[in-house]
Structures are given as C-alpha cells and as structure tokens.
Amino acid sequence: MSSPNRTASTTTSRWLSKSAVNGALVLAVVYTLLPLVWLVTAATKDTGGLLAGNAFSFEDFSLGANLSALATYSDGVYFRWYLNSLLYAGAAPSSAR
Image 1 (cartoon, rainbow, N blue to C red):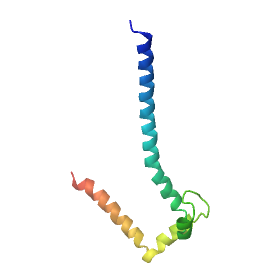
Image 2: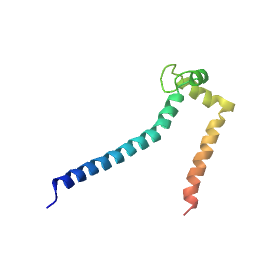
Image 3: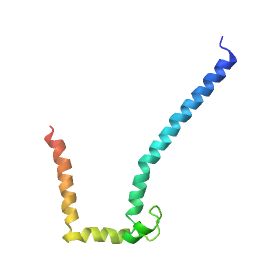
C-alpha cells in the first residue's frame, strides 16, 4: 500500500506538470497569434496612424484606402507579383512528381 504522503506528492507533482505544460502552450499560442493580430490591425491603419498610434486598435479604420492604394500602386504591379507567387507555389508541387 502506498503512503498518504506519497499519493499527495504524486498528485501535486502531476498538477504542477500539467500546469507547466498548459502554461507553455498558452505562451506558444500568444507568441503565434500576436503577430497575426498585429498584421490584421496594421492593415487597417494609414502610415501616420501606424507609426504614431496604437497599432492594436481599430480606430482610424483605413482598410479600404489601403487596399485601393495597393491595387493602384505602379499600375497594379501587386497583382502581377501575387500571380507570380501563386504560379511558383503551384508549379513547385507539380514539378516534384
């Protein structure tokens, strides 16, 4: 039979281990998602709002103006770059066969 001290020690050790693993997982999720949240909120800012304001707020929402500027930059060269990326991403798997 096991002693009560050993059972309590094992339970405490198991609880600490689970807490440490869950804490590490929470940190990993925050570390992964924080840049994505920043990317989404930064896309809604104009240059002045991004450099001078709070990048994580949705005030001064300029997403439409930013997308319009992106589409008209150098006569729409962004879409050519995007298509080029899609072609490379699609050609790489098909050439590996």
